[in-house]
Image 1: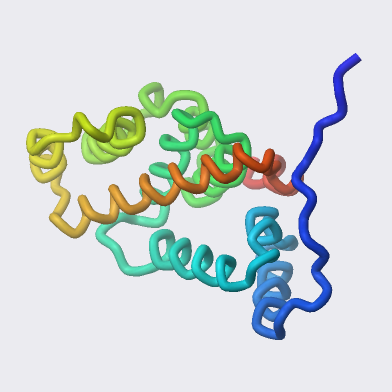
Image 2 (image 1 turned 135 degrees about the horizontal axis):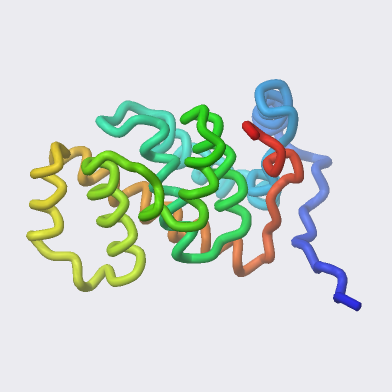
Length: 188
């Protein structure tokens, strides 16, 4: 008989600021849920704001990387880190943005098995190396990205997205954060 899963106990949602209540209402309207990662941060609204601002800037802001490519980085990094939360949530985003459920699953399991263009493969190889062995990144790695067509700003964005998800993966692991059930059925 398996043990019951102990999940993170989220703080009560009473007493949240009007700004946070409005943000959560917007999430419910657009996504049909409030992602558990946001609920987890709600214990400290300053941290929730900082997390949300950084996430929104990295994943939705102006970049030479497409939204799909940024989600692909999130999945490749989360696969290395075996982050159940992010693999489920961002795997769903890859399925949704690509319109290809198989790509989403391949990215979760092993991005190297997916049919990626050389630019995307170079991007993910860099993000994974940065995750696994950051001290071994050298100029040749950055030059490989330039040769694949990435600008200096793009290289910054690849590193920033990879770094953000390495942090997020570690927090999710630390508190046993589980993804919302809704993510499992999205874009299938």
